[in-house]
Length: 119
Image (cartoon, rainbow, N blue to C red; front, top):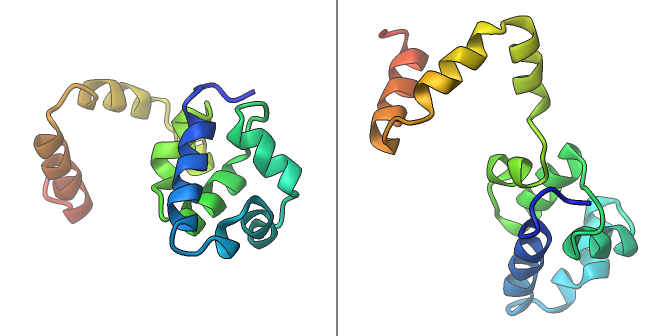
């Protein structure tokens, strides 16, 4: 089961929105075929009856033009690289907690400063 009841319907809405312009290319079968999964698996995910893998979420996000990082938490998943970083450096969890309430513009500035080595 998916952790968030909106994940499956969100994926379905995105697929159907794409299908409006290209019905054959965005049928359950067509999308499943491009992703290398069965139509049954995709249908189960869309109905919230199957918890998708990280790899599947990344693939479907790319196919439907969605943000994978926004889908992962809806499926109760954390990106593997983030999990590895937290296991290697537990203090990063404290950093996330300290940053979580920052307004979005300030968070983006902080991330930019860290990436640029200007902190």
